[in-house]
Image 1 (cartoon, one colour):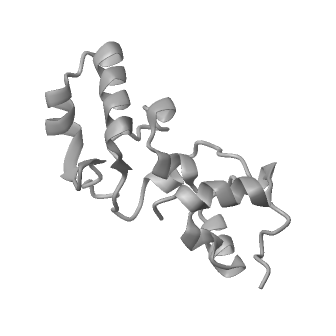
Image 2: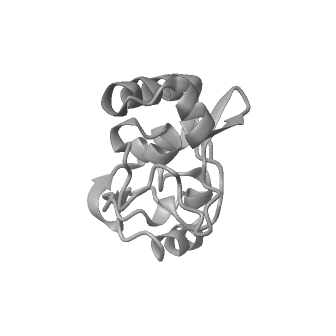
Image 3: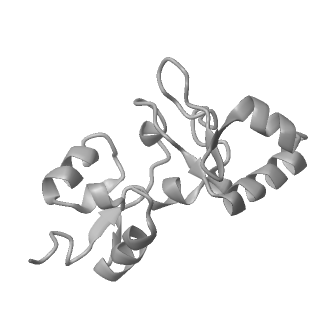
Length: 138
């Protein structure tokens, strides 16, 4: 059965933050991503690894997840945009090409109602999408 995205899909992140707010969830940093974030925050903000863990993260599996325990469910790194955009985890980089959004057109279109970057902008080929989706956690 052909995938609805066999001819590719359009998406360009608008950096609106709608995917960073709302329902609480897990924003997982794998150990390599966490180390890169920690080094970046140490260099740019003087935040130690211990402060990062204590004030910004929660333990999760073999690494950490960003705090999102705020009333509106926003990620702790969101403040009128992602404050660590270049160091965001692959989970965020892979959006919207998560397997759950690619399962059928209905799922894609429902997510597109929330995300203004979907169905416009850069055309991603089926090969590019497949490569992202195959490694995506979601």
